[in-house]
Length: 257
Image 1 (cartoon, rainbow, N blue to C red):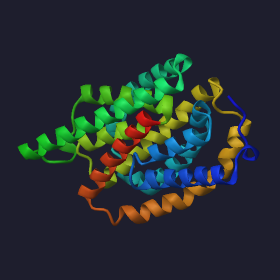
Image 2 (image 1 turned 60 degrees about the vertical axis):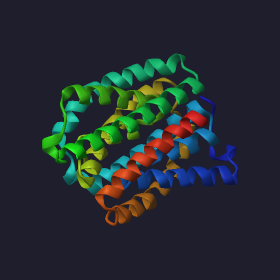
Image 3 (image 1 turned 180 degrees about the horizontal axis):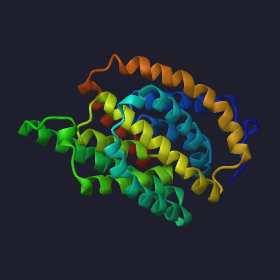
Image 4 (image 1 turned 90 degrees about the vertical axis):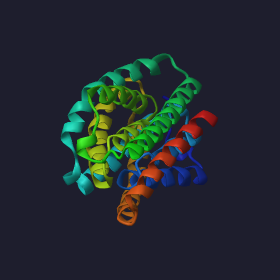
């Protein structure tokens, strides 16, 4: 990995990374999927492959804060259905990173995110037309969990972009706002921590990147508090629209970058 330290960054570049870190905290406690904007900022300021390794510890810090905030609302049966498929996706994503260049990675993830957003909107409109209730009773089966799980593991490994994929799964499964945030918090804490040895093995994390992370994590905390303040003021319908919009924006950013 190209060595990146604080001394290689201009003031504006550091400010952009600090804002992206703040947005990570906000996305983890308010609008999951919004951190695709952070991904785009990191990839613009830093070398694209190196940016994924530097962003990962920042995401884990946000995950810890989200778990502390929403730990009582996690739905563990859903998590246990997802984890095996996610593991497969992480392994596939690791192998993909061995040979894929940045352009292929961005295009692949962008197409997946836009496809998932379209499928979710279509399914929710069908459910509304049929009068299908939201909630645990309407959560779909293992086949759907496996397909989303593999895609989530793949996208989170190659570009830290698993948030929108899992957001689409949780929305399509009928989760309400707090259940959505609690389940996704535990999901990404466990998955992102499990990615650390893979990222280190690929040379995406080293001592220099961790030093930069230690500074950027400071900005995650106020973002998380801002997200907690905002989520109490967002109703369910607006919450769902914001999540879908963030997914579409993230997909377009990756395709147009």
